[in-house]
Length: 116
Length: 113
Image 1 (cartoon, rainbow over the protein chains, first blue to last red):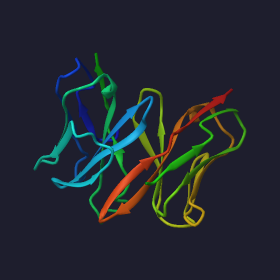
Image 2: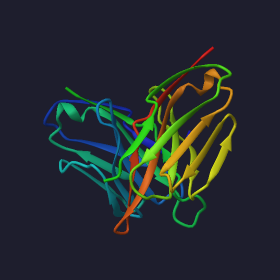
Image 3: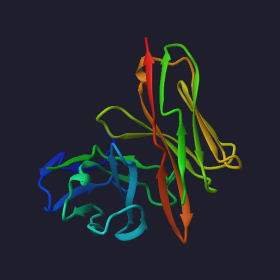
Image 4: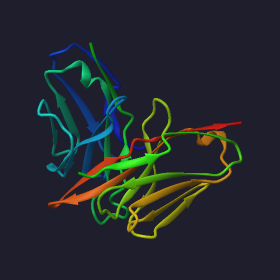
């Protein structure tokens, strides 16, 4: 158990809908990362937040957005869903700079999104 | 754009044998991670390699980083069935004060008793 929690574990929805995925980082971790893993695209970095601010962007679609709240939990919002958005979405957290191996990321169990 | 290539993509090996997984990347970076993923599970951090020449070992796995060659290796010694999983390398690229992480394609390792 990495200490990172994600809800829900599974989500089934229809095309065109909007969903929100939630992530709670490990205690003390200020950075949160979101990843998408699918069979055809592999594992892709979407976005990173550090202490509430966006820090880095990867291959995140405009239909997707994220935020990190003052209590450091993060939400990934996926809208106008398409069949191709079906994937496993992981959240990871890492320690703040200066706390040892601050780059090391700890992954949550993931949310499996199925778009029908 | 940073490209990260792993090979082989699939590796079937017998217990007790040694083998190496390779991770090549296209742009200068001095931070590389190795992760393990069991089927249907999340990713587990194995190694963080932070500098050229870094070598880390944990049990039957040893990872090294050569930033000049833009190459990292994950060496498996005397493989056991429990090592069966998919292994990913991931490379960090700093750009304009931001960092981006790019994952390799993964190497699916199957250790046969």
